[in-house]
Length: 285
Ligand SMILES: CC(C)c1ccc(C(=O)O)c(O)c1O
Ligand SMILES: [Fe+2]
Image 1 (cartoon, rainbow, N blue to C red):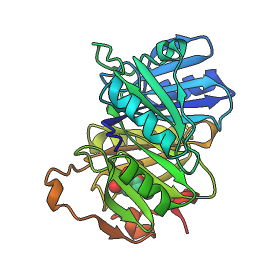
Image 2 (cartoon, helix red, strand yellow):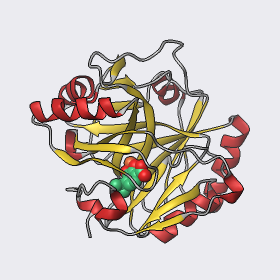
Image 3 (cartoon, protein in one colour):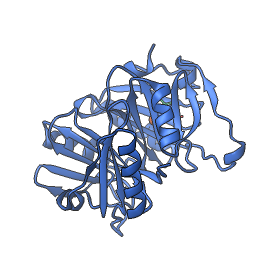
């Protein structure tokens, strides 16, 4: 079993690095941690970075998870290879540019690029965005799946994810106490469907709603409240059509043995308690 500790960063290819940086700083509210040649790293919490845009193909998207140490990384590579996954071992240059001690990359059964990393750096410096978005940190990622049952089995049996709830066939899966770190969305493609940052309060959601409207950013869902995690949310479009989500108040599951995953309908009431309707293809029938 591969024991994933947490989701740590996403890496997104883009043909317009300057535009992506402008969006990440001025709209999303992240802080530039570092500019490398052809890549910009962004900070959203105490970690060195939680997002990287790099010059490249927008279909080149990676989600990274932390494992405990070097021996766990080696064991994970062996497990994945036994199952027929091709595993790339990070080169020293790749590790340096990611600010991790070591990593491997493989693809999940749908073809989503996944990195498993050891000792991702913390900067020892807290995050402060130039725009006051109220962000408290990077929290979860939504991945496309071409076969939700197959991929749920991969994440919960090869890895240690546990299903907290399902919306239709889409599982919301936790790695620790937070309601979910990974959500899977049925589709005919691979890739990252959305990236979530937690914000401190309802005020931050409402303040961002007005700011995003003023900036003519495409708001795709919300404000609303998820019946699953009970978080209040707002979704909007970012560079290359990627969806970003702010949410606040995500619930935690501490009574692990007692928790039973719940089934919600794959229709607007399963997504939002306040009656907001998603304008996001992955959330529509
Ligand atoms: C709308 C998507 C499927 C979704 C649903 C529920 C939650 C949650 O419970 O927090 C999400 O974060 C979502 O992205
Ligand atoms: Fe989400």
